[in-house]
Image 1 (cartoon, rainbow, N blue to C red):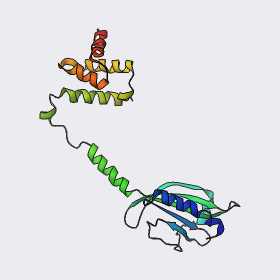
Image 2: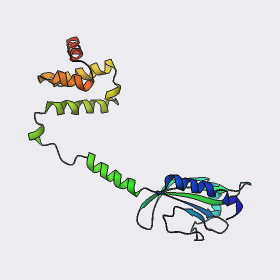
Image 3: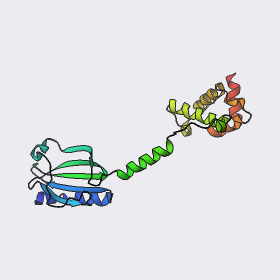
Image 4: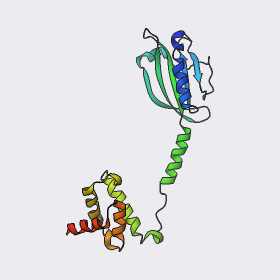
Length: 199
């Protein structure tokens, strides 16, 4: 590689070291139209291989190419980003390509989805009379619909939620007041005071 392109080598190597073993970093040389340097080789390319970049001379119109996807030789999905490299005169001399192997994250993503996505309904025989579950579902739905977080509810928001629970009949069960107090992190006395205020 030319001295102008060589000065980008430490940057490419540093990126590969930080994100190893998940990232491959390549410097393409516009002069030779070949791979000038490669770090943490994932693609089985080597220095001197043809870059196979079409119409490289037109790349000067864009300095950074936003993330795009590609498939590696072994079928793994890669997420890549490329940046134009210039000499001190501002002339394009190469392309820096960063290729991130996201296959493990994809596997983890599918694994998590399988864990959290419900594929069957709750058995009626187990949950028909589970008033705690019904309160949990209502609170969760209420918070989601109103863009709220349970931990950050202020006094007025807790009172409003509690009254909504009362309208839904949540307090018809004997121990519901204690449970709602625990969920909202308030005292039982506060629960009863809020319920008194409504009338």
